[in-house]
Length: 115
Length: 114
Image 1 (tube, each protein chain N blue to C red):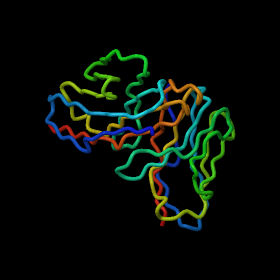
Image 2 (cartoon, rainbow over the protein chains, first blue to last red):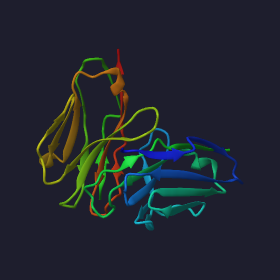
Image 3 (tube, each protein chain N blue to C red):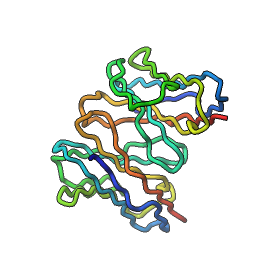
Image 4 (cartoon, rainbow over the protein chains, first blue to last red):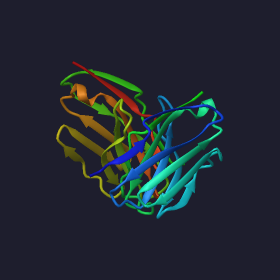
């Protein structure tokens, strides 16, 4: 079962709101990722977790706060976002981070609109 | 610098035509991996293939085939006898020693008309 589940599928939030995006995988993968994708653009890496520890932060603003409660779950906490943060947020997982030969499996994403 | 270039922004074909999506990459690493992903309108990126830098053997999977040529730094993707369900955005991506980080090309939007 190569499935990564993301909730919610759609989210509209105000600039003063606090919300969280959730991601779950049950493939036993030890690396999990957050990507951001603007319309008509490729996905851009935000964060990488390896064995539940943050290993890569691509200089993402602090209004995005990732959390990995356990090996199956990945959250992205959102606070004081700007309208330009509106995008598709994709979660992915792979067997390992250190081994470049493992493909990443993606969820369907959360379409976020900041108003 | 690590870079992936997909020069074709949009391609439109009629069903049953063959179509080739081009991908050119740049990397200084000798060990790297190349991928193709399909993104239908639903948003999910669907993994299609992985190729490592030491394996230039071409691969065929049903109507899909991939041509990897290190001499030209290209990893092209051909769909034979295209179908409407093939309509999607296709991304070529590169992964290297940083492990896990995918560098995506800009994507090619394929439209297959009946």
